[in-house]
Length: 373
Ligand SMILES: Nc1ncnc2c1ncn2[C@@H]1O[C@H](COP(=O)(O)OP(=O)(O)OP(=O)(O)O)[C@@H](O)[C@H]1O
Ligand SMILES: CC(=O)N[C@H]1[C@@H]2OC[C@@H](O2)[C@@H](O)[C@@H]1O[C@H](C)C(=O)O
Image (cartoon, rainbow, N blue to C red; front, side, top):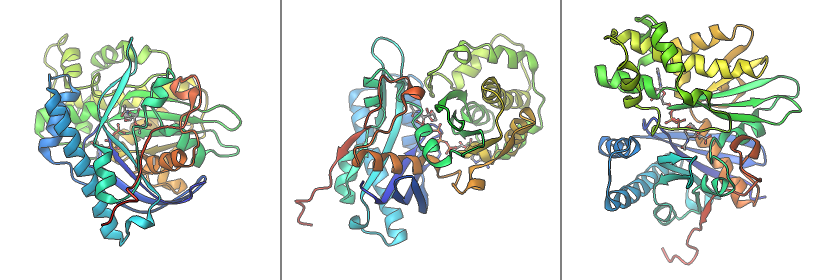
């Protein structure tokens, strides 16, 4: 087992910044030591957004973005290392998720594309990098996502309590941890992504702070039903999604069947859509003692209140309550997945992703031990 210090890097669908953590890992003990969020330059954010929403792009643009993201991730890692006084020899490996620019897990040629050249990261940091986590699972017929349920299972399973872990990032996903049962997990659909897109178009704000704007509006129940009728919500598991499907065009398409609706009511309806799509799926799976929330959506007070109201007999709290930073969960997961890979251990859960088998995930970009620097 390659125990020791690992770095985890996550840049998710919200494009709000690059989360970097350092953790000490010994099997299923993952102790967070420090974290840092590196800003995502607006120009890079816009490029990712346009690719992610289906605008045409040249191979040169993709290649250049891959290089620029590789440099940006390196910068973020080096910043955290400087902040913490760490050198390359203090770290076993870096687990870098990369930036998803397209995720198409179904069809006759499924794929998931993450950018951010890991060769650059290995060179600039002098540390072994593990990346490309999703495609080995896909090669076995899996969705390649969500991957965090394996981490949630390892760290948050309770001997008697039935727990759900809910990540509310751009997209939301759940892990159902029931003692003695196989873990279930899947993407439930939009987390913050639609609320972020709507407030951006209406007010040029990146997100609705604590859900304050949504709280000034009324849920439009007819619009809500039309949104919940979207076939994605009825798809059987395993399932995963992304910005290619849930985006501003999706909102416009749903609104096109309606006379003008006050924008704050649309925001309230989008908040309700996230809360209901998540809690309906949780309720379908029986009674749950505790719902542990992570991801940026945990800061949206109005959303948390709505989720708690929809699950009156479940205790709803952030994962911080059980000792794991809700803001750092995904970056922690990728440090642990890197540990699994360099230790030759499987990282996927076939019951979650639909893959035919367990597998070691990712590709290893070794530190250059020949370096004379
Ligand atoms: N104070 C706040 N009030 C309301 N929403 C917030 C607040 N802070 C963060 N958020 C929401 O959380 C989002 C960022 O969440 P997070 O960093 O978990 O997403 P991500 O990791 O990029 O997404 P994913 O998990 O889908 O990859 C922001 O875009 C915003 O919508
Ligand atoms: C393709 C992709 O990047 N998917 C992300 C996204 O963000 C949340 C949800 O959609 C989840 O499926 C996944 O991320 C987490 C880290 C996962 O794989 O578990």
